Image (cartoon, rainbow, N blue to C red; front, side):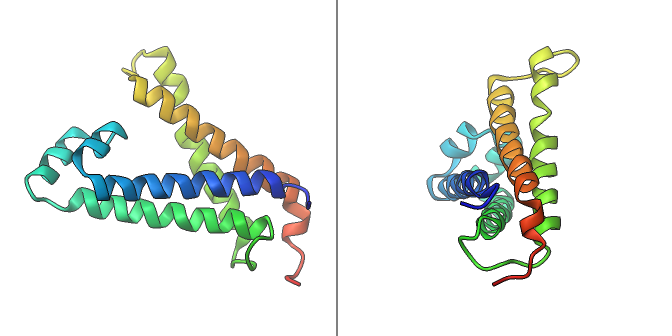
Length: 147
């Protein structure tokens, strides 16, 4: 297996799972949105017929699916996507920045960290590390022309 490919497959699977969970929120409604930490004002608006939360979730779902595709592309499971290195670095950075919210959530001052904040930040930090380390390991191979 190519360097970094294993971690990138794991990262892609994690992003795909996250994408599917977001689809679950759309399919199963308010209870799922609440469980997965959507803001309560948006959930109440959704329960009143406002579709903003659904559209936000659709955008997130598509984004996560694209991120999975970039990881799978870098792992060699699908064809090479455009701007592969740039995409992977951007994805890793977004995941890592979101994951870093773990530390203020653990300290709780001044940030009032909830259990959801702690768990979701820890999970996303793992996602970011998976993308970052996998990308770093595969870096030289990612610049090679597609075969």
